[in-house]
Structure formats: structure tokens, C-alpha cells
Image (cartoon, rainbow, N blue to C red; front, side, top):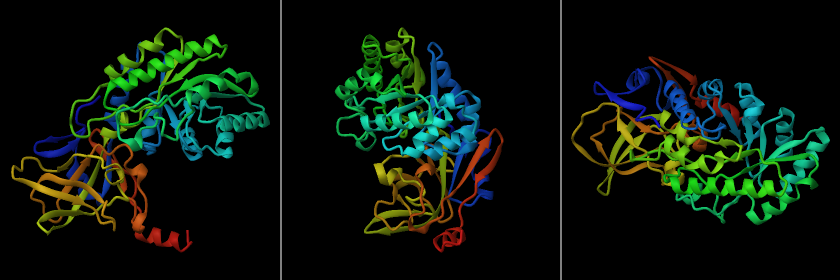
Length: 417
């Protein structure tokens, strides 16, 4: 994995060859800022780590669907993991070949399944017997055979936040292994389905190799069992979930990740599919905000910024920690402050009791590691316009999505657009 993509150079926060404050001179805050060159190099690092295996990395588009980030990854040979019909349509428009697209999701509609069939995607990751039945009927009507992998729920603790643990018994995702075993053995009952894969994604922001290795070993055992039962498994989708160092701490890198998940699968002559999202995209983004007001309430100091939980939801949703830094380095005097937003919710807090320099109205801050699940989770709550998105590539920066305007939102509410 890369080191800090955003770093100080000559006392100023920079990304690639661009000083962040210079971007803020021309782009009104708040805005998301992404590093494209660093993203491509990060993907190449992931590719090198898996070089010993036959593999395909399908980027999780739910983490960030910004075309300016996804196009370069498609050009590098990446695949896409989609969870909606619109994500599928966008992936195709951006140049991801259908053969490199997998369709996930616990609640795919019939129209979404038909879109995947007509596009001739690599594989559907199926989450229930009912979905198998629906997909089989739709494939019959389309005169096609749909490639599928059942998503197993192996009840493996990913050692992460409960809201992003997807492979535990209490989660809504996947199929109970006992039920999956029966369905795979009945594969000939589904004449229009090709049971070509097996899949498990156990969670997100996983900071230990243990659960990832355990998941890969479990899937390897399933390949052997299913082939013995006459099911021609060719693909193993091990999901994603590798975490990033939100607090600047040590984390497993791509080499460790590959060394833990490839060995149980290498001798099985399968293609290994992964679904990286956060690990690729998270460190590539920063959310740049400006201080509006500083105040004290009952002795507690609050810094109010010009963004809110509608713009960046992770801290309010998961109590997620993100580093927050000044754009200028070297201020020694620090004191604890709460960095809060303007939304009318007590949970609209980006950081509590964070040690930061004395801040004044108009100063700029960067919330780091926001390239994944940042803009993608934004909304117009409180009828607030969503922020701009800006990319950096080398020494150049450009706005790739303009900030919404109040006039646009009002016109939409009135049905005028």
C-alpha cells in the first residue's frame, strides 16, 4: 500500500505535485480532492502482489463511482463489482468489459438481473434460493445461461465494526452454508444457470490478516467439495474488506494480503476474484473544509465547518475516525476541539476532543482518507447542495463534478427540472 498520499511539502499540505491550498483558491469549499496518479500506482502495486496467481481485481464501485477515478483503473485491466443497475450501466460506459464485471447485492430487481444477462457479465453473486429461481426463469426467457456463484455466509468474525461485518450469522448477506451445499448439489435443477463460482465477502475495514486467510481457506475447501460433487467451479471470489490506516497505524499491506489468501487456492486451477474498494480508493481522497465559527459551550470548544454529515457520513454513521489536519504545517500549540458540521443533528460531528492548532474563521482543514465511502454516501439532507469533486494528476488539477447549487435543489423540489 502507498504511504501518505497527502503530505507536507515546504510546510504546505500537498498531493502529488499540487498544493492543496492552491486548489482551494479556485474551488469553493467544501470539496473532495482525489489523486489519480497515486491511485493507478496503488492498483499496480496490488497487481504485483497477486502476480503468482490467475486473478481479477473487481473494483467495488459502491466505494466511489467517480468516472475520473474508474476510467484509469479500467484501462489498467481492472474489473468492476457493481451492486445496482445504474452501476452496471456506468461500468460499461467507462470501458469495463462485461467479462470483467460481477454483480453483487442482496436485493437485485428483475430489471437489474435482466440488464446483467443482456450485458453478458462475468458472474452474478447470488444471495438466496429465491434469487436463483428468479434468475433461472429470466435466463430462460432471454435464451441465455447465467453464470452464478452463491455468496456464502460462513459466520466468520472479521474483527471490524458491527455495521460492516457482512459474513456473520446475524448479517442479512449470503446463504447459510448448509443451504448452499444443498443448492449446489441441485445445480442441474436450474437448467439456465451455470454454477461456475463460489463467493464470500465477510466485511469491510478488516485490519487483521487472520479472518481474510480463514475465509480463503474455507473457500478452497468448498471448491474441492463441490468439484467432488460434480459442480464445475472455475472462479473463487474472496470479496474485499482489507482495511486502511485511518489513524496512521500499521496495517497489512498488499503483499501480506496476497500471501495469506493465494496459497489455499493456488493449486486448484481457479481464477481468484477480489473486490477492492476502500484499500484502493480510501487513501486517495481528502475532504477539504473551511472553518465558519469557533465557540465554547460549557467549557467545550467547538469548531464549526462549512460541511456536514450530508457531505461526509462515515463519522456519524460508524463513529469512524479520520485524521484532520491543517493545510499549513508546524503549529506547535494545540488544544482539544470538536470539529462539527452545520446539519441539525447532534451526530453531525467529524471529530471529538481532537488536538488541533488554534483555529480561526476562514482557515482550511483536510479530512484525510475520504476517497472511499465519502462522496458516494453524500446526500441533500437539510436541502444542502452536495460538494464538488476535484482530481489531481501530477501537477494539474481540475473539477470533475461541480458543486450543486441552491437554485438547482429548489428547482428540483418544485418539479421544475
